[in-house]
Image 1 (tube, rainbow, N blue to C red):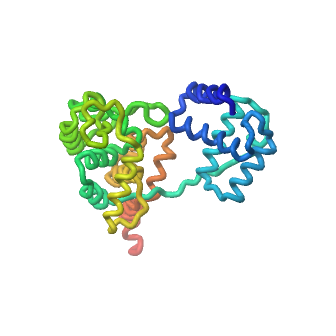
Image 2 (cartoon, helix red, strand yellow):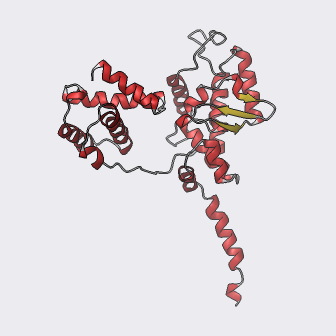
Image 3 (tube, rainbow, N blue to C red):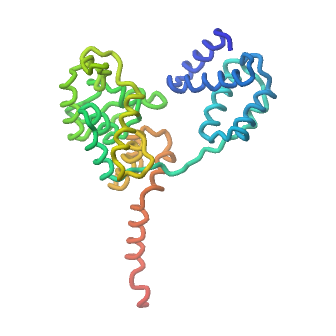
Length: 293
Protein backbone atom coordinates (compact mmCIF):
# COMPACT_ATOMS: atom_id res chain seq x y z
CA UNK A 1 0.00 0.00 0.00
CA UNK A 2 1.17 3.57 -0.46
CA UNK A 3 2.62 5.53 2.44
CA UNK A 4 -0.51 7.59 2.90
CA UNK A 5 -2.70 4.51 3.38
CA UNK A 6 -0.09 2.83 5.54
CA UNK A 7 0.03 5.85 7.86
CA UNK A 8 -3.76 6.04 7.91
CA UNK A 9 -4.02 2.37 8.92
CA UNK A 10 -1.58 2.92 11.77
CA UNK A 11 -3.51 5.99 12.90
CA UNK A 12 -6.79 4.06 12.70
CA UNK A 13 -5.34 1.32 14.91
CA UNK A 14 -4.01 3.90 17.36
CA UNK A 15 -7.48 5.42 17.61
CA UNK A 16 -8.76 1.93 18.42
CA UNK A 17 -6.11 1.77 21.16
CA UNK A 18 -4.45 -1.32 19.67
CA UNK A 19 -1.11 -2.33 21.13
CA UNK A 20 2.14 -1.88 19.18
CA UNK A 21 2.33 -5.65 18.65
CA UNK A 22 -1.19 -5.75 17.21
CA UNK A 23 -0.42 -2.82 14.94
CA UNK A 24 2.66 -4.60 13.60
CA UNK A 25 0.80 -7.91 13.15
CA UNK A 26 -2.11 -6.30 11.28
CA UNK A 27 0.20 -4.24 9.07
CA UNK A 28 2.22 -7.37 8.28
CA UNK A 29 -0.96 -9.24 7.32
CA UNK A 30 -1.89 -6.60 4.74
CA UNK A 31 1.68 -6.48 3.45
CA UNK A 32 1.73 -10.27 2.99
CA UNK A 33 -1.51 -10.10 1.00
CA UNK A 34 -0.04 -7.40 -1.21
CA UNK A 35 3.21 -9.33 -1.72
CA UNK A 36 1.28 -12.47 -2.64
CA UNK A 37 -0.44 -10.71 -5.57
CA UNK A 38 2.45 -8.33 -6.33
CA UNK A 39 0.10 -5.35 -6.36
CA UNK A 40 -0.64 -2.57 -3.85
CA UNK A 41 -3.35 -3.39 -1.30
CA UNK A 42 -5.58 -0.62 -2.66
CA UNK A 43 -5.67 -2.36 -6.08
CA UNK A 44 -6.63 -5.81 -4.79
CA UNK A 45 -10.13 -7.08 -5.61
CA UNK A 46 -12.46 -9.11 -3.39
CA UNK A 47 -11.91 -12.28 -5.43
CA UNK A 48 -8.18 -12.01 -4.84
CA UNK A 49 -8.72 -11.72 -1.08
CA UNK A 50 -10.97 -14.79 -1.24
CA UNK A 51 -8.39 -16.82 -3.19
CA UNK A 52 -5.61 -15.72 -0.83
CA UNK A 53 -7.45 -16.98 2.25
CA UNK A 54 -8.25 -20.28 0.52
CA UNK A 55 -4.59 -20.66 -0.46
CA UNK A 56 -3.41 -19.98 3.11
CA UNK A 57 -5.96 -22.36 4.59
CA UNK A 58 -5.89 -25.25 2.10
CA UNK A 59 -2.46 -25.12 0.47
CA UNK A 60 -0.31 -23.64 3.21
CA UNK A 61 -2.19 -25.30 6.06
CA UNK A 62 -2.04 -22.25 8.31
CA UNK A 63 -3.14 -22.81 11.88
CA UNK A 64 -6.32 -21.23 13.19
CA UNK A 65 -4.34 -18.67 15.21
CA UNK A 66 -2.24 -17.62 12.18
CA UNK A 67 -5.35 -17.42 10.01
CA UNK A 68 -7.09 -15.31 12.65
CA UNK A 69 -4.29 -12.73 12.69
CA UNK A 70 -4.24 -12.52 8.89
CA UNK A 71 -8.01 -12.25 8.70
CA UNK A 72 -8.23 -9.64 11.46
CA UNK A 73 -5.55 -7.44 9.92
CA UNK A 74 -6.95 -7.62 6.39
CA UNK A 75 -10.52 -7.13 7.61
CA UNK A 76 -9.46 -4.08 9.61
CA UNK A 77 -7.79 -2.53 6.58
CA UNK A 78 -10.75 -3.09 4.24
CA UNK A 79 -13.32 -2.14 6.88
CA UNK A 80 -11.77 0.96 8.44
CA UNK A 81 -8.80 2.24 6.44
CA UNK A 82 -10.06 1.52 2.92
CA UNK A 83 -13.73 0.54 3.43
CA UNK A 84 -15.01 -2.12 1.03
CA UNK A 85 -18.42 -3.77 1.13
CA UNK A 86 -17.14 -7.32 0.61
CA UNK A 87 -19.14 -10.44 1.38
CA UNK A 88 -15.92 -12.42 1.83
CA UNK A 89 -15.04 -10.47 4.97
CA UNK A 90 -18.46 -11.22 6.44
CA UNK A 91 -18.39 -14.86 5.37
CA UNK A 92 -15.07 -15.97 6.79
CA UNK A 93 -15.25 -17.59 10.22
CA UNK A 94 -12.27 -18.91 12.14
CA UNK A 95 -12.82 -21.12 15.14
CA UNK A 96 -11.03 -20.14 18.32
CA UNK A 97 -9.29 -23.22 19.65
CA UNK A 98 -9.40 -23.70 23.41
CA UNK A 99 -6.76 -26.35 23.94
CA UNK A 100 -5.59 -26.59 27.57
CA UNK A 101 -2.35 -24.67 28.12
CA UNK A 102 0.91 -26.30 29.14
CA UNK A 103 1.42 -26.00 32.89
CA UNK A 104 4.52 -26.62 34.96
CA UNK A 105 4.43 -28.09 38.44
CA UNK A 106 5.70 -25.97 41.33
CA UNK A 107 8.79 -28.18 41.51
CA UNK A 108 9.46 -27.65 37.80
CA UNK A 109 9.19 -23.89 38.25
CA UNK A 110 11.69 -24.09 41.10
CA UNK A 111 14.06 -26.07 38.87
CA UNK A 112 13.87 -23.33 36.22
CA UNK A 113 14.51 -20.54 38.73
CA UNK A 114 17.37 -22.53 40.22
CA UNK A 115 18.96 -22.91 36.77
CA UNK A 116 18.91 -19.15 36.10
CA UNK A 117 22.57 -18.18 35.85
CA UNK A 118 22.37 -14.45 36.55
CA UNK A 119 20.56 -12.23 39.07
CA UNK A 120 18.79 -10.63 36.10
CA UNK A 121 17.44 -13.95 34.82
CA UNK A 122 16.37 -15.16 38.26
CA UNK A 123 14.64 -11.90 39.19
CA UNK A 124 12.86 -11.61 35.85
CA UNK A 125 11.61 -15.20 35.70
CA UNK A 126 10.54 -15.13 39.35
CA UNK A 127 8.57 -11.93 38.74
CA UNK A 128 6.83 -13.30 35.65
CA UNK A 129 5.81 -16.46 37.51
CA UNK A 130 4.93 -15.11 40.95
CA UNK A 131 2.86 -12.24 39.52
CA UNK A 132 1.41 -14.02 36.47
CA UNK A 133 2.69 -11.41 34.03
CA UNK A 134 2.76 -11.32 30.26
CA UNK A 135 6.24 -10.85 28.81
CA UNK A 136 5.79 -7.21 27.80
CA UNK A 137 4.10 -6.36 31.10
CA UNK A 138 7.18 -7.57 32.97
CA UNK A 139 9.59 -5.73 30.66
CA UNK A 140 7.68 -2.47 31.14
CA UNK A 141 7.83 -2.52 34.95
CA UNK A 142 9.36 0.50 36.67
CA UNK A 143 10.56 1.07 40.22
CA UNK A 144 7.48 3.23 40.74
CA UNK A 145 5.17 0.28 40.11
CA UNK A 146 6.13 -1.32 43.42
CA UNK A 147 4.19 -0.35 46.52
CA UNK A 148 6.18 -1.57 49.51
CA UNK A 149 3.51 -0.58 52.05
CA UNK A 150 0.78 -2.65 50.40
CA UNK A 151 3.15 -5.15 48.77
CA UNK A 152 1.45 -4.79 45.40
CA UNK A 153 2.67 -4.48 41.83
CA UNK A 154 1.01 -1.97 39.51
CA UNK A 155 0.76 -3.35 35.97
CA UNK A 156 0.26 -0.44 33.60
CA UNK A 157 -1.19 -0.63 30.12
CA UNK A 158 -1.65 -4.39 30.06
CA UNK A 159 -3.50 -6.16 27.27
CA UNK A 160 -6.33 -3.94 26.09
CA UNK A 161 -4.67 -0.91 27.69
CA UNK A 162 -5.91 -1.88 31.16
CA UNK A 163 -4.13 -1.30 34.47
CA UNK A 164 -4.33 -3.71 37.41
CA UNK A 165 -2.80 -4.35 40.82
CA UNK A 166 -1.31 -7.71 41.79
CA UNK A 167 -0.07 -8.98 45.16
CA UNK A 168 3.73 -8.89 45.24
CA UNK A 169 5.16 -11.84 47.22
CA UNK A 170 7.76 -10.88 49.79
CA UNK A 171 10.32 -13.26 48.28
CA UNK A 172 9.89 -11.66 44.85
CA UNK A 173 10.19 -8.20 46.35
CA UNK A 174 13.48 -9.19 47.96
CA UNK A 175 14.80 -10.55 44.65
CA UNK A 176 13.84 -7.33 42.86
CA UNK A 177 15.53 -5.16 45.48
CA UNK A 178 18.75 -7.16 45.31
CA UNK A 179 18.72 -7.14 41.51
CA UNK A 180 18.01 -3.41 41.37
CA UNK A 181 21.12 -2.79 43.47
CA UNK A 182 23.19 -4.28 40.64
CA UNK A 183 22.11 -1.60 38.13
CA UNK A 184 20.36 1.21 40.11
CA UNK A 185 18.38 2.49 37.16
CA UNK A 186 16.12 5.32 38.35
CA UNK A 187 13.13 4.14 36.34
CA UNK A 188 13.32 0.63 34.88
CA UNK A 189 13.30 -2.58 36.88
CA UNK A 190 14.73 -4.59 33.99
CA UNK A 191 16.85 -2.20 31.91
CA UNK A 192 18.89 -3.27 28.90
CA UNK A 193 22.38 -3.88 30.30
CA UNK A 194 24.29 -3.58 27.03
CA UNK A 195 26.91 -5.96 25.67
CA UNK A 196 29.31 -5.24 28.53
CA UNK A 197 26.56 -5.58 31.13
CA UNK A 198 27.33 -2.12 32.53
CA UNK A 199 24.77 0.12 30.80
CA UNK A 200 21.89 -0.67 33.15
CA UNK A 201 22.15 2.49 35.24
CA UNK A 202 21.66 4.84 32.28
CA UNK A 203 19.51 2.64 30.02
CA UNK A 204 16.24 4.12 28.77
CA UNK A 205 14.85 0.91 27.28
CA UNK A 206 14.10 -2.45 28.90
CA UNK A 207 15.66 -5.80 28.03
CA UNK A 208 14.91 -7.05 24.52
CA UNK A 209 12.06 -9.54 24.15
CA UNK A 210 14.30 -11.84 22.13
CA UNK A 211 16.95 -11.88 24.86
CA UNK A 212 14.43 -12.96 27.48
CA UNK A 213 12.94 -15.65 25.25
CA UNK A 214 16.41 -16.97 24.44
CA UNK A 215 17.19 -17.02 28.16
CA UNK A 216 14.18 -19.26 28.83
CA UNK A 217 15.04 -21.61 25.94
CA UNK A 218 18.62 -21.99 27.20
CA UNK A 219 17.47 -22.85 30.71
CA UNK A 220 15.01 -25.47 29.45
CA UNK A 221 17.74 -27.10 27.36
CA UNK A 222 19.77 -27.51 30.51
CA UNK A 223 16.86 -29.23 32.28
CA UNK A 224 16.19 -32.53 30.47
CA UNK A 225 13.93 -33.57 33.35
CA UNK A 226 11.31 -31.11 32.06
CA UNK A 227 9.78 -32.85 29.05
CA UNK A 228 6.99 -30.32 28.47
CA UNK A 229 7.04 -27.84 25.61
CA UNK A 230 7.31 -24.72 27.75
CA UNK A 231 7.83 -21.05 26.94
CA UNK A 232 8.05 -17.92 29.04
CA UNK A 233 4.25 -17.60 28.84
CA UNK A 234 3.99 -21.05 30.43
CA UNK A 235 5.02 -19.43 33.72
CA UNK A 236 1.89 -17.28 33.56
CA UNK A 237 -0.27 -20.34 32.86
CA UNK A 238 1.38 -22.10 35.79
CA UNK A 239 0.75 -19.14 38.10
CA UNK A 240 -2.97 -19.19 37.32
CA UNK A 241 -3.27 -22.95 37.75
CA UNK A 242 -1.34 -22.96 41.02
CA UNK A 243 -3.54 -20.18 42.44
CA UNK A 244 -6.68 -22.15 41.62
CA UNK A 245 -5.20 -25.29 43.13
CA UNK A 246 -4.41 -23.26 46.26
CA UNK A 247 -8.09 -22.36 46.55
CA UNK A 248 -7.99 -18.76 45.26
CA UNK A 249 -11.40 -17.70 43.95
CA UNK A 250 -11.67 -17.84 40.15
CA UNK A 251 -12.88 -14.22 40.00
CA UNK A 252 -9.79 -13.09 41.89
CA UNK A 253 -7.55 -15.07 39.53
CA UNK A 254 -9.31 -13.39 36.61
CA UNK A 255 -8.58 -10.00 38.17
CA UNK A 256 -4.91 -10.78 38.76
CA UNK A 257 -4.45 -12.07 35.20
CA UNK A 258 -6.21 -9.06 33.67
CA UNK A 259 -8.74 -11.17 31.76
CA UNK A 260 -11.78 -9.32 30.44
CA UNK A 261 -13.88 -12.47 30.50
CA UNK A 262 -14.19 -15.11 33.21
CA UNK A 263 -14.52 -17.67 30.40
CA UNK A 264 -10.88 -17.06 29.49
CA UNK A 265 -9.77 -17.80 33.05
CA UNK A 266 -11.92 -20.92 33.24
CA UNK A 267 -9.62 -22.72 30.79
CA UNK A 268 -7.29 -23.34 33.74
CA UNK A 269 -9.95 -25.51 35.34
CA UNK A 270 -9.25 -28.03 32.58
CA UNK A 271 -5.64 -28.52 33.61
CA UNK A 272 -6.17 -29.19 37.30
CA UNK A 273 -7.83 -32.17 38.96
CA UNK A 274 -8.27 -30.36 42.26
CA UNK A 275 -11.91 -29.48 41.66
CA UNK A 276 -12.77 -33.00 40.52
CA UNK A 277 -11.02 -34.61 43.49
CA UNK A 278 -12.71 -32.26 45.94
CA UNK A 279 -16.10 -32.84 44.34
CA UNK A 280 -15.63 -36.61 44.44
CA UNK A 281 -14.76 -36.46 48.16
CA UNK A 282 -17.82 -34.33 48.93
CA UNK A 283 -20.11 -36.63 46.94
CA UNK A 284 -18.77 -39.67 48.81
CA UNK A 285 -19.44 -37.96 52.14
CA UNK A 286 -22.92 -36.90 51.04
CA UNK A 287 -23.88 -40.31 49.69
CA UNK A 288 -22.17 -42.31 52.44
CA UNK A 289 -24.26 -45.05 54.01
CA UNK A 290 -26.61 -45.53 51.08
CA UNK A 291 -25.43 -49.14 50.77
CA UNK A 292 -26.72 -49.73 54.32
CA UNK A 293 -30.23 -48.52 53.52
